[in-house]
Length: 477
Image 1: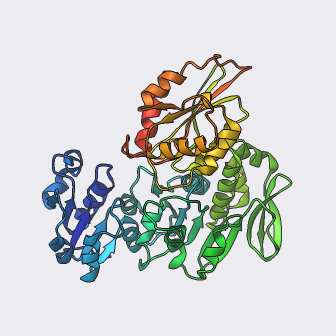
Image 2: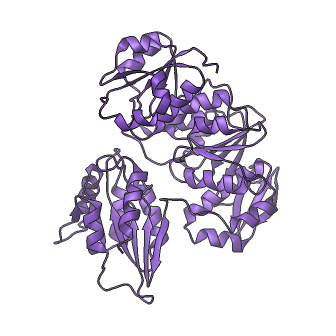
Image 3: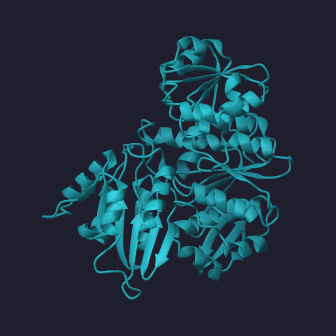
């Protein structure tokens, strides 16, 4: 994509840094940039300051969007918060302007082999674990994308060798604009699909189609990795991917399928009807202690790394040093029978269920949950809480999603005569639970699990801001 002297409109500078990184990159590559945002100049002061010298080369239209800007510019770069049904995007489409996001630009300019990971849950862990395995060969392998501090376009400029593989995590928003890009992932991974982002998509099929864009541009010599245990895999297969397909599954794979699966505690790789043990029971059991869902993440990551050229011997050795991922069931404090877990990146009820199942049984479990609604189903989480935790051990952070969860729990007669322990801020909850009674003891351990199961926007900038706040408060335990 040649951007020299192209008129580019960035729709949404935002306050979280993504719009800033994109705008700076566009200026650096010679585009004539206009930034438009419904926020005012004073509201965007910090972001404008972050642009540095690039701000002098940018035209700003703030406090509003204007239709003429969407008509006059050649390329419209869309921010994640922009509604797909925006009237301004409709204006741009009518004028046949090119609508892109940073992921689309990335795949237009990067010639490196890309391993791309998406899914509802596990995509951040899988992305980082793929990079961990690749670094057994090349320490400079980078991971970037949805939850990384390294922006996709900044990564594009850092790549010195066209042969170095790159690992990127892509959200459904990233993937919405991917069709039509110059390059496609050499290896695409879809970890799973659960109900999520239904405040953006009308139905699950729309959400699934966005995820499917990860393989739409792939060719026959490229690879696609799918979850053999997900009911949505059949949906993806009906879209007729061109790439060679591999599966990861907790069940034995039929001889006709290529992929990875467990057997007698070890992991076996199967290709062209022949299987071999590739990761031992001992190494797998270390991962299983982090929850069965992380065995799935391990299989997806190991399979991707192997298809990228890493030997099974190297992968098996590296399993024992798999990194813990920040804000994903991250154990941030352990002392005298007390364990504190920061699972702030749990933005859906399914993620909370996985965390409860992982830590229930390690001692008395205290759950802190709640946040902003995304039009998700809280009935399964309510059932899990009712069957697992007494109401005195569940603390709710107020929010639109919290109301729905509490309503489901009331339907199941969870609270009986007690009232839900509902708090307006995280500080008050931590103050209340930091001295559990009876006190933690090595023989009577307590696990405090912060797993919101919802978005964060009513009280925090995002789930990472929420996680940082909990980290700071956890020092008081």
